[in-house]
Every structure is written in structure tokens, then in C-alpha cells.
Image: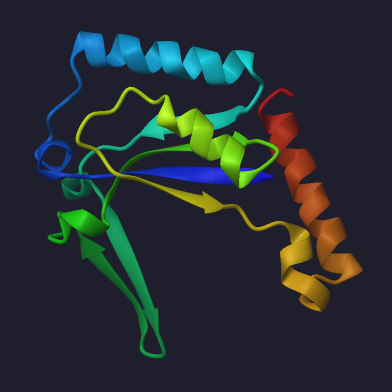
Length: 140
């Protein structure tokens, strides 16, 4: 099962505060544990929403909205994608993350099976080809 772990933004991350060398070292150590356990597929920090953009789609077209975005509680400062055996396992891993005064959100990544009959054999084949192409582009 794949899970996305979303690290919520706060005033500091939205203000552009960068982690200290000690913060980076502690997070690097935690990430190394995830990699050695074979559960980490990806993980990155995100710059403040002032460097971001939103696209809003409607019947009238697409609207581009430049950041910053004001509702800090709804913003994301970073993420991991982990492949683990259960929701409980990802929770146990994330209890060990070196955070203080931070909120994270854990969401399961949808799989083809979650889409039921809407994911036809043709769509599954197309998706498999795209995934293979991405892996080739990344040298896997």
C-alpha cells in the first residue's frame, strides 16, 4: 500500500524560514532509516506558497491564481510517499519523524482497484505503459 504523508505548513514555513543544519541532519537521518527499510519512494520539502500557483477549472475556462495563499492551515510544506504494508505501519514510521509543533496528514494513494469498472483493461494497459516510460526516463 502506498501512502502520502503531507506535512502541513505554518507561519514559519510560509514565511520562508529554512530549516537549520541540525534540522536537516535529523531529517536526513530519519529519511535514511526509511530508505534502508525500503519504504520510502519519494520525499521533498516545498517552498512557500508565495512561489506557487493554483489553477481553477470551470465551465468558463481556467483561471491562474498566483500565491501566496492566505489559509496557512490548508497549505503543505513537504511530503513523503511511502510503500508499507498497512496504515498502522505508516503511522508507526511517522511517529518517529523529528518534528516539533508540526501537523502531518497521512492519505492512502489510490490504486487501480479503487476505481472499479471505470478502469477498463485498455486504461490499465495505458497506465502501465506510462509508468514503464517514467521508470525508463528515471533510469530504473
